[in-house]
Image (cartoon, rainbow, N blue to C red):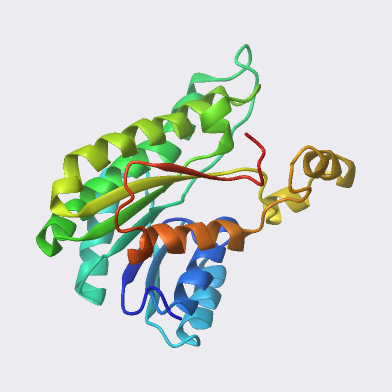
Length: 248
C-alpha cells in the first residue's frame, strides 16, 4: 500500500545518510520528492534518477537551508515545479564537536545556523502555501542528543533541543489550520558517517542499545512515512524517538 500517493515532499540534505533513506522510502510510497543538496551534484543527479525510476516526480536543488533568502526562493521554485508542498522534512544538519572549553564561537554559531535556523527558514517558507491548502505535515529532525545532551556537543545538543521547542510552538500555532508539526529524534543510526568509526566503538554503541543494533536510515524513514501520512492525522507537537530503546 502506498501511503503517500501524489503528496509532494521537500527534504533538506538528502544525498546521503538519513536524508537519502527518507527520499527513497517516500518515493516507494508514491510521494513526489524535491530535495536539497549542498555540494555533491553527482550524488544529487544519481538520486534524482533513482527516484524517477520508482515512478514519481523528483528534483534536486542546490540550496543552503541556513540562508533565509535561499530557503524562500527554494520553496517558491518547488511550488512552481510541483504545485504543492504537502510535507516538509527538515533534515539538513552538521556537527562541529569539541569540549566547551575549546569550542570556538564560530563553530557554535555555524552549528546553530545550519541545524536550527534552517528549520525556521524552511518552515517559514512553507507555512503560507500549507495554510492555503489547509493541510500539511512538518517533520523536524532532532536527535537523542537533543533529549539527553552529550559531552563535547554543546552546540549540536543546543541546536537539536531548540528544534523540539520550536516544533511544539509551531504545532500550537498552526493546528487550527490542519498543519501538523512533529519531531523525530534518531539514536545511533549507521550511515556513511558512522562507517568511518572504529569497529570496536560501533560494537560498544550496539551493545548499549536494548535492541542490540544500530538503526538504519530506513528505520528513520519509516517513522517519517507515519508522520507524513494520514495515519498520524491526530498527532502533532510530539517527539518520536527512533533509537532502539537507547533512552528507555
